[in-house]
Amino acid sequence: MRQVIGSGTPQDKAPWREAVARILSRHGNERGELIPILQNVQAELDYLHREALEEVARALRLSMHDVYGVATFYAQFRFSPPGRHKVRACLGTACHVRGGDDVMAALERRLGIRHGETTKDGEFSLERVACMGCCALAPVMVVGDEVSGRCTPSKVDEILARYGGGD
Image (cartoon, rainbow, N blue to C red):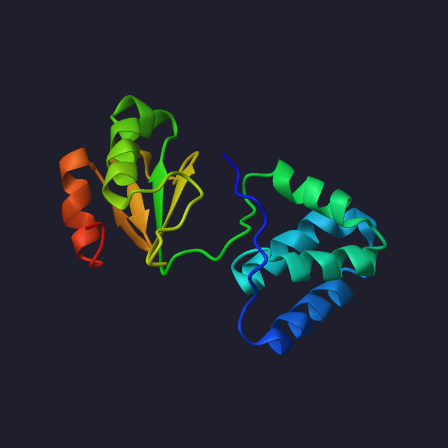
């Protein structure tokens, strides 16, 4: 289930406004650039918060409803801050046939969250991805930039323990 857009914003508002203005000017405030603008805003801010979306809507002369509709259509967009450690589980074909679904289920149990969610303490976010490009190591999970191959549900605890989490 997609998360409802959050109202929280980064603590210091000036930098996010400057970042959004820079991104909009790079794209020429063109409506046809909405998706690349949203991608750039998320890359810069880590997620799409309400105020940033309102600024994009205003600059492109679109309704917030239109901008939000586009953003929520695509699974790539986040509406709440990601955790300090981003955990991704591959569920591509090779990972799927080698137990990727079991690894994902173990991650959900251990972290107490589902795909697209962040733990209450803000330490971990969980995402499922279509392919990590490491098919020979299937099933694969990634924490931050660390790839762990040939994962099993029992290895999930060991991997997360390196990051102090999942208890």
